Image 1 (cartoon, rainbow over the protein chains, first blue to last red):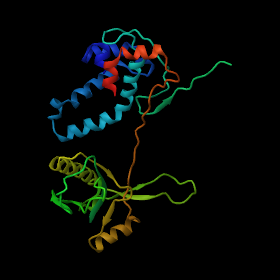
Image 2: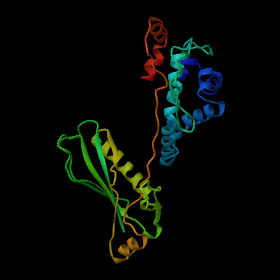
Image 3: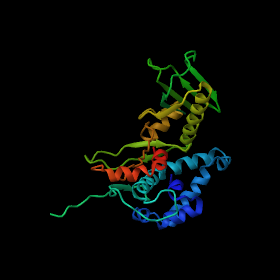
Image 4: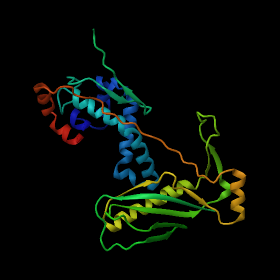
Length: 115
Length: 169
């Protein structure tokens, strides 16, 4: 979905996401995004040829990071201004209400109202 | 000493009607057994049993209790991981052979150490427990947004991202 949103893949996609403000708001860094790209490569069928131990590791790591990645995907859906092109423009349709941090903990964003 | 652990299997579609129970597979020194299937055909109990080396046993001590009583103690042993891999392997084999997706979950409190002689009983006495240690972890998930109101503008903006929504859903 991220490839579809930015019209880019692999390293180029990672570079774009690292500069994308909504991703930065969730704390994503170039290092973390590069790590996710590496994990994705390991999870591919080609990498799975390494054997069952590799597959178990990849499944375990993917499960740990999936909930945070899902937050990123959602935020791209509700913020990306122009779909399918390599742009960083945003148009936020709704605020962030919660997200998972890189350490797996939950952040709940509480909105405040001016009296 | 033997270790026995209980799982619940969930069949995501009905397994073949001619599947015969009980199913018992002796493989790699362990036994995988499904005594029967539930009446609705959607779930079954499964057991895995095999030998463990009591010389590798260590004790896990639980957290301090609020009422001041002794924390729980449980026996831990490295071979336990092999049983987890074994059930995974058996379920994948079963799922493939009966052409039915199968999910499995370990039953809470379903782990039992079975002594095979006085030496094993003595081991329990020395350790002060027969209980098997279980560790749990959780993964938090959250939806990162919510719409309090959905306007025409919102719908129009999302409509331009149809590919993304199809892929997300």
